[in-house]
Image (tube, rainbow over all chains, first blue to last red; front, top):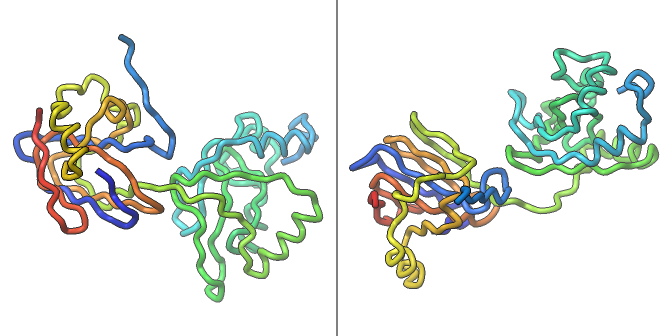
Length: 39
Length: 231
């Protein structure tokens, strides 16, 4: 999904589990930190 | 920095400083004072060695003088391991303009003495002498609970949390899908969100994100976007 400039994504309490994972396209600090594990 | 004491030349110091890949790592307690990461290691050591104002390697060379004359966007002098162009005013009569935010990329340009003097005077007069090259979109964590973390190496080995391909692709084409968890995003940086709620705001442009893991209510700008179920 895409958040437009100024939009806020609000998440509620977790159900049926404890953790969620929010991946960010482009990575942290603007770097394309995309790595593939060794196969 | 003293070139003589650090056994180098002014040009070398300038070249090393300009070549740094700087990012605003954090903002200090004084709004607008930005601490940069990315200073060349040699330059950092040289700065520490030549700094009369060095304090555990954390203060820039001309801190006291800069503090007295700091104005928004003024050119900053070479600093130690934490480099710091500042953008905050020091007088209540000055207009508070904060140029930098955490995550911003900062580039220094080499200028001659005449240009520096001109920019210095302009900064003294309250002009912004820094140049905004591009606005980088950011995802601001507006709120988040305990047991959360940033996983900048991605979610290696977390494939079980990925939604099935049919839902992922169909949702994307229909435009109604709220989540996409592709091979790319699987290994992209992620924020692990603990059991409590959280809020994230895009700034400076659109930000694409993908959500997986525990089921929870999700909305954007007050519009319900469904929830996420563990695959």
